[in-house]
Length: 156
Ligand code: HEC
Image 1 (cartoon, helix red, strand yellow):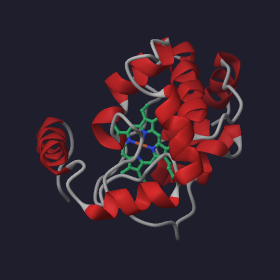
Image 2 (cartoon, rainbow, N blue to C red):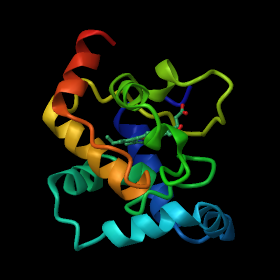
Image 3 (cartoon, helix red, strand yellow):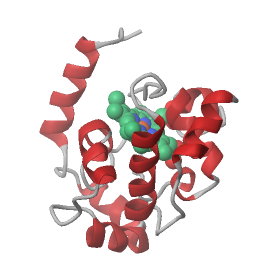
């Protein structure tokens, strides 16, 4: 239900634009993730001009927010995410194939569905984006290489 493509995307973006940072709940979430939040504020923002940061802002931030904190109930925070800082294979697969194909069925559910990015991003761009995400939101979890993305594309 809810359709796919441009209509839901547009509705969704206007929703987040009107709701970001308004709720105390989002502050509570950020406070709970305090160590990661400290890392994020140091590396996210106008001073991070890396290609990965730019790609994140273009491709992921509409949903996960520029500071990675997500929107409660809609999209998860990447700061508190075990997937972001965990096993590289799971992270790459979740973004290539979409989390619904990869993450456990009993995970916390959100009102929005994240699309697969395999067709939308090449290996180098996805590697840069995920390297930024791990550096900024994952407490400096290790970089992701283009070769790792390519390998998961071959053997998803
Ligand atoms: C249309 C909104 C949307 C966009 C765009 C989007 N995501 Fe997501 N993302 C979500 C939602 C919703 C979930 C939760 C999905 C689920 O668990 O089924 C999610 C989950 C994730 C997770 C797993 C988090 C966890 O702890 O379970 C990661 C990692 C992630 N996204 C990274 C990214 C990256 C990197 C990009 C950009 C390349 C991106 N997302 C773009 C909506 C989005």
